Length: 209
Image (cartoon, rainbow, N blue to C red; front, side, top):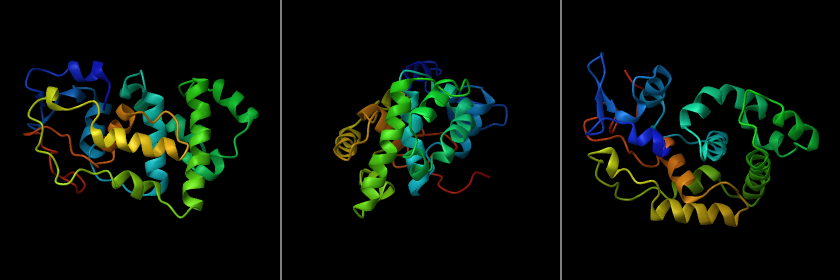
């Protein structure tokens, strides 16, 4: 969740108390889609090649937009990009690009679409060289973990680690993976836990109860 508009909409103090009695990071507001995403996905550790590839691609599409826009289009993105199977996406050509540009269910940005296809090629090259995208991203997890942010203003848009991850991914040929995009992916994948102090999800890695 890196979108500045989302971040500044949070109430003073950064936490929001909901009718169920739970305190949550204020960026999710009262929107049910955002609340569910906050409770069940954001900040929970995720590993796996395709899952990490999908998150990087979606965060790339999010650049300049609200994450809620991408979240509501996520299933359409998954259909359009073959479940973010890199082997399939790497085979997309001009016909597939034209179809994607005509798909109203996704963000129809040619540069981002072409970057996603390029990233599938980069992913395959990394794997063929014996690497792992999941392991690469997780290798930038901070150790020891930083203290929990007290307020939304304490949550950075990027960090030296996300800048280093960005540089490494670009060396492998990935695109639309700037430091802010990489940090948003690190947050979403649970590589960092940026739930605020006092948020009911802070420090929880198991499925929510």
